[in-house]
Length: 87
Image 1 (cartoon, rainbow, N blue to C red):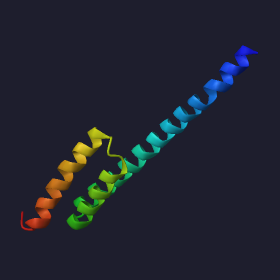
Image 2 (cartoon, helix red, strand yellow; image 1 turned 135 degrees about the horizontal axis):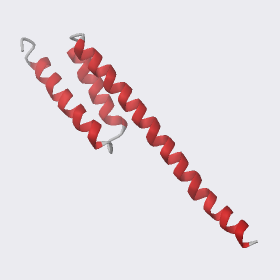
Image 3 (tube, helix red, strand yellow; image 1 turned 180 degrees about the horizontal axis):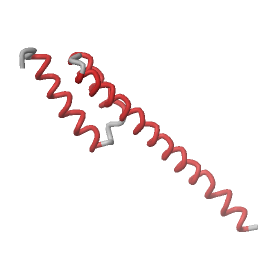
Image 4 (cartoon, rainbow, N blue to C red; image 1 turned 120 degrees about the horizontal axis):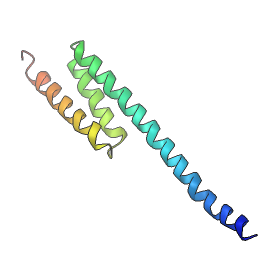
């Protein structure tokens, strides 16, 4: 009987962790996709679009420091190109 109680008590905690991991994975996929869209826009010379896409990507997961660091650098580079189109 006590084993059943332990299982029932632990189940919600485990379920929350699974949902949390799933959410993190979904955010990571969405973030990578948006970053790739920004990179593609930059390659095609659509700097304003790239800037917007990088900005949108930064809003997806503020806790993803590694990817966000790259996004901030990419956005800064693109921002310089938008401000100074001849460079």
